[in-house]
Image (cartoon, rainbow, N blue to C red; front, side, top):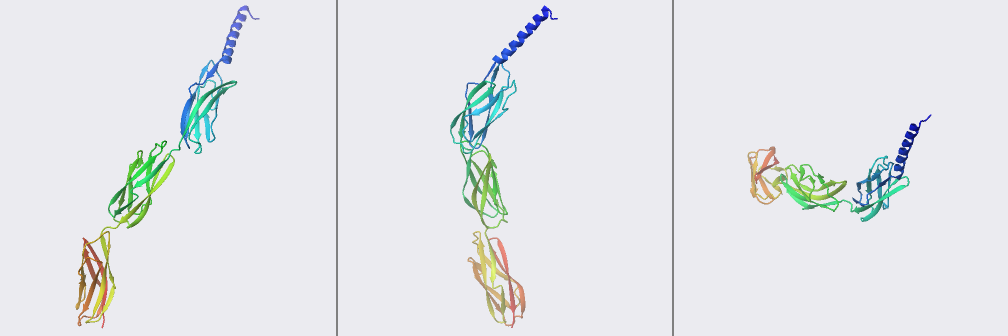
Length: 327
């Protein structure tokens, strides 16, 4: 049996519960009236926080987006708050094909029959990009020396990241270093080091730049020039003489790397009774004539290792002549 005091207490509790229920039903939530602004480049994503306030309101709030143009997708995290949550994160992903302009979208927050909206102004920017160029586009470097190339980086308005530079296609003996290797400015200097062992010739080298998912290349033509030098060959390299006879041999000089010094010729290892003369002895052109004369008393036989020597410009080269003396 309920006493009067118990009935009064139950009445108070009922009133309190009713007040709470009325407060929940009559409460509300609000999104800010200030528009959200976002700038997202083509092919990229951007995020923003969506916050709201609760006024004596407890309930799950779900989010959606309206007015997004084709090529713009969205994701809310979480897509629905718990009963006390007051924020979510919106991620917008913009396809490469979306036109660069301003769009007006609506963030929609809903809980039961309560629905709120907040304007979102999205500016789609041009896709981040950069180009590479080199100056000079071609250079010549001697063996054992180095040369430099300036790599110019042109960024568009939305590309602000670093560009990592690498060199591809360098032949053996050629190495390249970039300063800086990861460029945040408008240029980098490539130093090409050519070893003395690098083969002379022309090579197309590729400079590759990578940054923010973008990959670009540019080509520089490197000509490796031989060091000043010469080589020597005999024509013919084998001759026969009769005692008392003569024979001639052409000494051919091949000059490389701008070698222009005179080459002094001499001969070593002639058998007794054989003499040699050069015309000229000091060669400033590319050929000389070697005349061999065998005395009547020269002994017959084969001499396979007669040395013709050329000295000039700090270089010392030899060629081997085979001589046969036969009756």
